[in-house]
Structures are given as structure tokens and as C-alpha cells.
Length: 347
Image 1: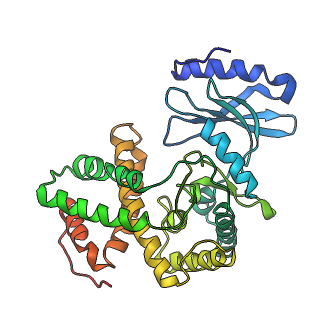
Image 2: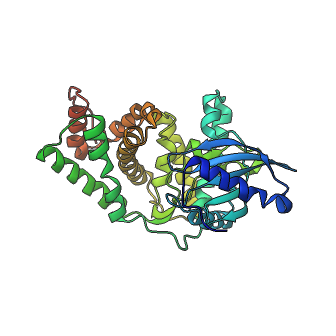
Image 3: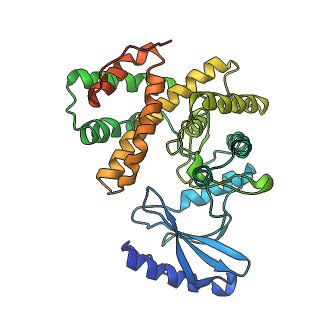
């Protein structure tokens, strides 16, 4: 079958249905039941359809913008680590189509929004912490490095898209030097951490609620890298879609740290050291997210991402306000957002 380079929605859907029709005999799927399931921040789209035993998921990743091969590769790595991830039932890498097992319809985020009782919330997050520890023991064969150069490059979205586009600011030389110094400090510190498999978005929208020991199902891991061990716990406890106050952040971080130590992961033996490391990692991640969310809104027309900016900004300020070395960043944030600078307590 020749690759379909045209990635218009109509052309993609026609090609997708043609491919699915070719799978009917082998998998018993029902192409006529195809319906949208979800989309994400990339060009990927997801559909759900009926099978003789329930439902399956179809991933549509236009080859002109996406590549299914990393998803297939990382799926294998995570399966080796015992994580509950989608099974790949069929694949067409040339056209960018995958047929996957269905992990259900409710993410952690959706369950939280529906009003999950606290005892149930704590139980499913203990499951997520255990899954994270297993994931960090996964093989990392063939994964790119999340090294200093990549960490530094990712931060360029903050001045361009958050400061200049979202806040409408013109950064003068002093502002630019402030950001350069802060970025260099964060990248230098974070890139020194021990390297493990990093999901990069291990948080509530990418954890599927399951029953029993299979909880959680883990999705959206195609961008996995080998990088700082604190990255994914920072992603989980400073969730860009769900606000967690500091006491809850600490509770989950301590539980993770204890489990990681017990599993023999290369994590600091002193929690105070680890706490600072994951907060600095979270600061870097959330500065990048502010830029990414602004870019998604203004370049790609996905304006709902602006709704999450106040939460992410609060996480940034939580860390920037705690450490003296980040006072210049806090002053710059105040300037960008037309706030009056206040002196807070710092360590």
C-alpha cells in the first residue's frame, strides 16, 4: 500500500477506513462503527470502534507530522517493565495507523473532575506511584537522551511564546540575561540527575482508570526519553491539568521516594535533597509548559490551553518564591504580569 502523504482530515479518514476494512477478516472489527475518541496537543487523532469482544482504539498519526515507530518501540519497553499499556493489534507504519486495545474511557483527570472521593483518589494515586517506579526500571534501549542541550532548547518557548506573545512584553537585555542565567542554572542542575526512562507527561490525562491490579493504564508515551529521574514525579504532583496543594504534593513525593529507594532506583538517599531536585525540575518543566500552552493557543488555535495557565503559573511561583536564587525570575514574572513585586520567605 502506498503511503498517503496528504494529511487533510478527509483524505486521512478515507485511507484509514480502507485500512480498517482490510483488517476485518483477521480482527473482526466493524469499520462502520468508527467514531472519534479524542485528540491531543499534536496532530494525532484517536477513534474507537466495535469488535466482537468489545471496543478497540485506532491511532491516526499523519506521517508528514508524526511517526508511529517511537510509540511502537516504547510500548515494548513498557510492557517489559510490567506496565499496563495498549496492546498493538495491527500496524501500518507507512500511513501512520495503529489498531490498539482499548484501556477504557475514563482518565484520572476525568475521574477527578467527576468528584472522586478522597479515599479512592489516594488509592489510585498510590497505584500511579507504583507504576512510575516500575516504569523507571524499564529498559531504555534506543531512546534519545534528554540531555542538557535538549533541556535548554525546550526552554526557548518561554520567552518567545509566553513572555512576548502571551504577555505582550518586549524583553530588554536585563530580562534576557535574567532568563539566560536562570535557564543555565536549571539545566545544569537537572541534567546532572541519574537517567531513567522519562514519560514526559506522566499526569492525570495520560493515566487511564482501570479496575484491580491493572490500574493505571498508561498512554501517550511516544515521546519518551532517557532523562532526569525526578521529571515524571514532578509532572505528576505539579499536574498541569489538576491543582494539587503543597501538602498533597509532598505526601505523594515522599511515598514515591520511599518506593523508589526500596526498588533500588538511583535516587538521593536524603529526601530534602530529592525535594529540591524535583522542585527545580518542576520549575523548568512548568516554564516550558507556559510557553507550549501559549503556542498551542496562538499558533494552533487551541485556546482552551489558556485555561490551565494560572495553575501552571502558580506552580512556577511556588518554587521561584522558595529559593533565593530565583528571586530575579520572580521579579521578571511580576513585571510580565503587571504585578507588584512582594518579598516572600525563601530558603
